[in-house]
Every structure is written in structure tokens, then in C-alpha cells.
Length: 353
Image (cartoon, rainbow, N blue to C red; front, side):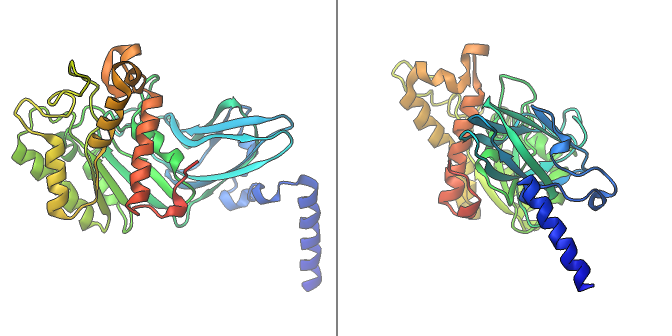
């Protein structure tokens, strides 16, 4: 028995030397119920598809080729999973991330999308040397509860900041983006495909980031406050950690170069100051707060009328509410910074570069 084991190890070592990619080689087919290995065989030059059920998966990629390369990875519905990563000519760079696979794969009230896990290779000179996909065993989840400024937008040029957030997280932390276009606190709580679907999935240690305000145009203050409190209580009931997020600003300037106090800063027609209510609930309920209103206001005003257009879809759609891919990426980095600064995510799980 020992002799046979030594023989098998010798064969394995020889195979390792011959491929040079043993760390990232695919697991045996029988490990996945007879399916072919979840590795490079599932990829073309620009994309990979893995027939896996809904769940959370760790992905390890080996990037690089004979010439200098620069590769980024997106997945599912235009979700940014790995920022563009350079590899010198002839060298390989290993990176890992954790991805949430679900149905529907984008907006919760949208189309189902393609079954399984789909990854797309991008960047200025993409090169994938190897890949391995395995079920995640100990991953923590960040659930996103929000509206169109947060969601996984299905079509270019739109992008929500939640769509860009995964690229700032390392293996062991995934993003389950349940933000949905057009939702208010009222509709999010009332739609069975939204809160009633999210809450049962929450596990102890999960983070739930809540940003709802843009569509609460006719919600009175008492109702808005009560709805936020209900979301917080629902998260805590499951052992999760709620985080309240004030809404991103609208790009609506006064003549003096400051943002409009009502339209831009999310005060609705009933006089409800949404960011102020969020801050108040966070303080009263002892909930961590990411003041994205204050941070995006400072950034937009510092850029000014012209330069701030690039953050939104002003040039493409005359849209001062929804962000471009660039703007969503910048705003996601602000959220990343707060997750790290407030120790909501362990330092080792935050990608800073």
C-alpha cells in the first residue's frame, strides 16, 4: 500500500513538472458528479462558462502569456470581479475572488439570465493561462439592498456602484446584489422577490448594506423611518449586521457651484430629508453608517459642473442621477474605503490595488 502511494505521488510530481500549473489545475471530473473539470477547458479566448448550480464559488485565475498582458474579469450581469491586472511578458500572476451565482443573476425582478457561472475576460491585452472554480466553503456575504444607483445594471452605459464593488474584495467575501431599479423602501419590503427573498438567506456574520431613498418621492417621514427600522430589525433577527448607506447625490448644481439642497441632496416633495433620516435611524439603532451622500457631494462639488459629468450619464443620456461605469467604480471605491475604515470587512479581504 505504501509502495503504491509512493508510486502515485511520483506520477503526480511528474505531471506537475510537465504542466507547470499544478496549483491551478482542475479537480477531477468525478468531484463534480461526472461533469468535466471546472478549469481552462471551460473557456474560450474571451469567456468562460461553468455549469454550476446557484451558490457561492471561489475562482482562482492565472494571468499572463508570452507577451505583456493586462486582464480584467467581469461576470454574470456585467459584474466587475477583478480589476485590470498587468503581467510582464513570460510571467504569470495569480489572483483569486469569490462570486455569487444566483437566479435571476442581475436585478432580482429581471430576466433569469444564463444558468451557471459566466465570466468575461477584458482589459487592454487579456491573457488567461489557467483557471479553477471550486465551491466556497467559508465565504462571508455582503448583501446589497438598494435601487437603480446600486443594482447590477443589465445594459451599457449604465452601472450601479454595487455592480463595481466586488472587484474591491478578495477571496472569502462575495457580493450578492439584490438592489433593483425603481424600488423604494415601501416597494422593497412589499415585493416577495426582494426583501422576502433576501432575508431568509442572511447568515450570522453577513453584512447587509441598505441604500433606499431615490424612489421614496411620496413616502412620508414616519413611514420612511419605520421602513428603515423594519429592515434593520429583519437583518438582526437573522444574525446579520445591517449597515445604513445614505443615497448618492444627484448631479444638480446651483449657480454658485454647490449642489441643490433639495433635488441633488434627496429631499422629497413632502419635505423629507432622506439622508438626515438615515443618519438619525443609524444613530438611534446603533447601526454603522456609510454617509455616501456627504462623500459624493464633496467629490462632485470638488470636480465642478464640467468634470463631474463623467461620473454620471450626462453626456450619453442627459442623466444626472445614474452613474457611468467610471462613476460607479469611483463610488464603489468610496464604499470600499468605509468598509475598511470602519472594520466592517477584515483588512485582508479588501483589495486596495
